[in-house]
Structures are given as C-alpha cells and as structure tokens.
Image 1 (cartoon, rainbow, N blue to C red):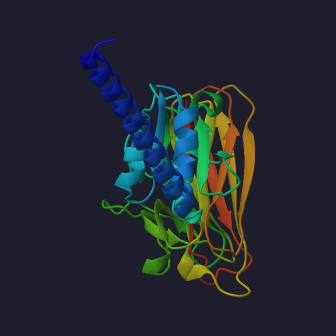
Image 2 (cartoon, one colour):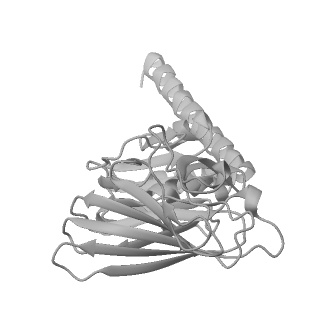
Length: 293
C-alpha cells in the first residue's frame, strides 16, 4: 500500500470515528431530552408506531415536539376540519390530561397510551369518527330547537337570530353555543343550564345517516363547588324505520370533561336530549355532540 493510500485510509477511519461519535452524542442528547421531558419520549414511541396516514395533535404550543415527531405528520393546537377521511389514526398529546378536552369533544373516548393519561389514540375507522355529518355546535335555530318542560319557566325557547335559544327565565339561563372552561381548558360546547322543577329538552332534526354519536360533557369550572348536584342528559336517537337508541350521560360535580360514544343504526334520524338535575344551583352544564360516519 502506498503512503498516499495509507493517508486516505487513515482519513476514512477518522471520518467514520467522527460520525460514530456524533451519532452517539445525538443519541445521548435525545435520551437526556426524553428524560427531562417525558412527552418527548412519548412522541418518539408514537413516531415508531405511526404509519403514513397517522396524525399527531399536540394540544399546546410545542413546535419542538412537532419537529421531534418527523416524519410523522404532526400539528399543535387542534384540528379544524370535520372530514378526516384520509387519516387512519389520530394521536393526541397534552401537557396535562385536561388539555385533551377539545379532542375528547370531537372524538369521544380513545385508547390511553403509556399509562400517563396525557396521550390518547383514536382509530378513526374503528370508531367511525372520520367524517362529521351532524354537529350540535352548529345549527342552533335551524336543526336545533329547545323548550323547557314543567316548572315556572315552561315554554318554547325561540331562536333570537344570533346564537341563543331564548327560554323563559333570566338571561344567564339561555341555551347557546359558547366557550367554557373545564379544569382550566377551553371547550366550545352547547350550554344547557338545567332547572330543578322540570327539564330542558333539545330536539335535533334532519340528521344524515351516521354510525356513531360522540362527544364530551361536564360542569364548567365556575359551577364546581362542594355539594353540587349531578346533571343528567338523556339522549334518545330515533333513526327512520329502526329502533331508537337511548344513552344516559351523567355529569358529576368534578372538574374536567367526560367523553362518551355510542353506535347508532345507519339511517336518517332525529334526536332529543333532555337535561335534568335535582338542584339547579350553578349547574353550568355544557356538552358536545357529533354524529359521524
């Protein structure tokens, strides 16, 4: 071997050693970052599990976690589309368990990952959750009407042309879609303050054929206090020509939201949601409801 060849060989060995050292340093840095931020380790596991049609949604502003997810598709903040047909799985990652509330309000319960509670996954095909055909956050005054039955405020709740259904009683008691906070996290939902001497009944009409109904519900932070009563929402789903489906949702006097999901016959439908409580004091009840294919 010539002196020139020997020099080239030594250079190549040096380059190889430098690459190995760099890779080792990067691995050490990645390990250190994952140890200091458990969510980074979670993102790494998701990245290894994910396929090309999977999406990671990080609920808070965390561009470093979005970057760490690459090449997995990832966004921070939320999902603004109701048609996720191309997506197979949605992974949600919050800085707290409560931060997942908007995703629970869209997809209902999911599969909790890694035992932490801050990471949840939804198989959209399995839950029929990809495309929304009806949304209770929309259609107030058109496909969504309400009335109070029984008690001093009994009567219809006509649409006021803005965003409210105006029942008898005080202004704060009017059903409307607005943002409420649950364990500090904002969720846009249908506000439905119940009454102790009757019930508040919503009617949903012209619902396109769906396979599942999903969402989340709860009593907002302003309504949580010692001794607060539960609020019950009875959902009656009536598909055309098929047996009705009944689901009872109970909001307990605790912070945060409760996700739910139930399957329905795939047919055009109408539905009612009846809200009751034994004690209406500060029962700031709010819910989302979406019918999906």
